[in-house]
Length: 121
Image (tube, rainbow, N blue to C red; front, top):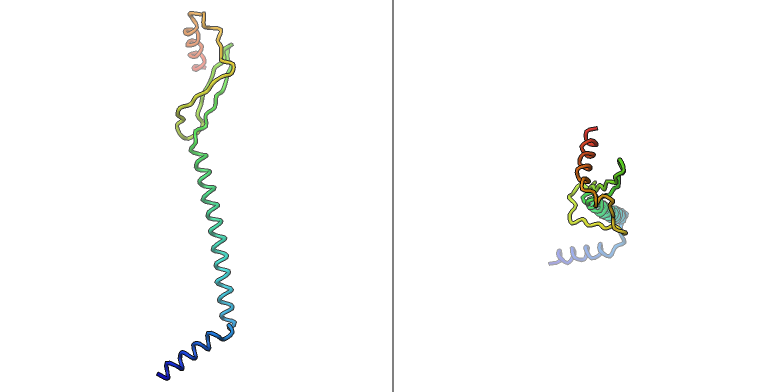
């Protein structure tokens, strides 16, 4: 029993002793490691956030409406430059688009003829 008391007394004395240089060095190294770990975690979180934002921007449809004039006609082109399918696309014109060819019965035939010429050459 006296050996146990001596051991307990020695441990208690060691616990109340001032820290040695190895204790201080160990504490400094562990604190530096903790700081590096926190900085790396913040950096990794920023990288994940940026990757998510970029991925969402890349998979989003990007629809463009363009007007092209050729041989007196204005052709309306709608094109999706995005990497995914664009759904439920709606667009309006203010003021509404008007045509001068509503009264011409040969309008459709002339447009088809011009389109064939245009695609050939």
